[in-house]
Each structure stands twice: as C-alpha cells, then as structure tokens.
Length: 135
Image (cartoon, rainbow, N blue to C red; front, top):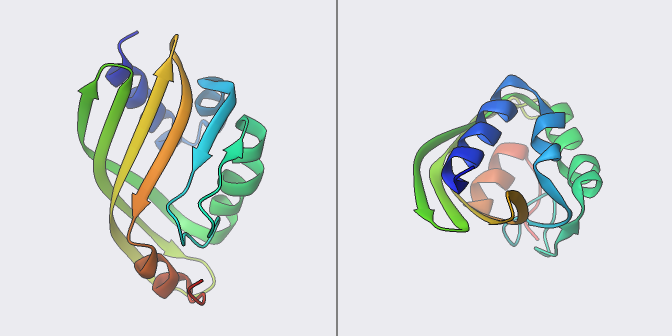
C-alpha cells in the first residue's frame, strides 16, 4: 500500500474512533514523538510501542478533550516518509477553551508499518487552551 494512502486511512480510522485500526498499523517498536514542550510529553522523548502511545496519549486525549479532531489538509509523499500539514480542533474538557491550532506530522514507514511519528505544533497554544503551565 502506498505510504500516503496508509496515512490517509489512519486519519480516517482515528476520526471514526477506531483506535485499534490505528494501533494495528504501528510497528511493535514504533517511536512516537510529541513536539518538545507538549503538555503530554514535555521532554519530547519517544514513547516506544503501540501500547505506550495508547496509554500515554490516546486514552488521555479521549478523557481530556471533547471533539478532538485532526484535520489533514495536505499530505506530502516522500516515499517512506509522509508529511501532513493540517489543524487540530476540539474543546478542552476542564478549561472549556476551544483549540484551533496548526499542526504538522511526519510519519516514517517501513514495510507498510509506521515506525516513527513526529509532531510539530504550537505548544504555547496547547498550554493556553489546557490551562497548564509551560515547561
């Protein structure tokens, strides 16, 4: 499956709430990196493995946000790397503040599985919406 098509399918599955389908596309040793200073992983250190991504991020997002959505605008095909330019939207459950933030995701694939993910986002905006202190 071409890399861009796989990533399109992952965004579609995430939008439907089909987290098992998303996790199934991950290599068992996926390295998932949030942007440095992100409230969920301020150090930017990788979570390794699908279960780590599920426990440390996906389950927390589901509890912290109402209607959290990724809006892919453009997918750039660079062979085994796909770059997504888009936006995040949603309402933070505790603060009640709405999020509308530009985002970039860099996906690295090998043999049809995601082996690495890197997020770039305005982390100051995330902190402001979430009402959390910046690291």
